Length: 125
Image 1 (spheres, rainbow, N blue to C red):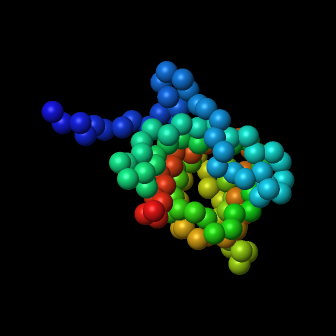
Image 2 (cartoon, one colour):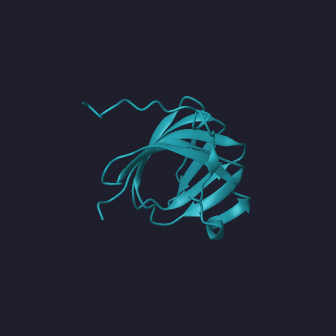
Image 3 (spheres, rainbow, N blue to C red):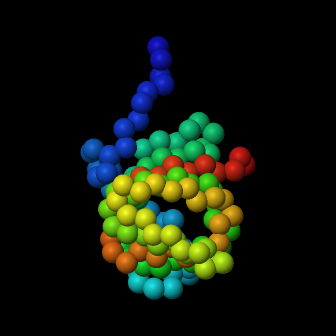
């Protein structure tokens, strides 16, 4: 029997339980607003190094240092401006997709409620 199946990502989270609180943002790194995160992880590979899900957050600004994984995002709602430590800023809105590399340093600024699909790739333990 084949146990490999396709996983559908849903913008509302789990079809049975919706979205749940997540803790990706360290409150110590928030410089504006209050980060209230919700999401759902739809997929994790057997090694635990690849995750895919949906994530949403209230408006806030977070400064990240040494981002822990490579991440691909597809924006569903809201707007996000990412400014690297060199001052280069890029703004992403619904329909935009972007990659952020492991080790990135800079600020994520969400001026309105924000939601995305994401895939993270973590270094092997």
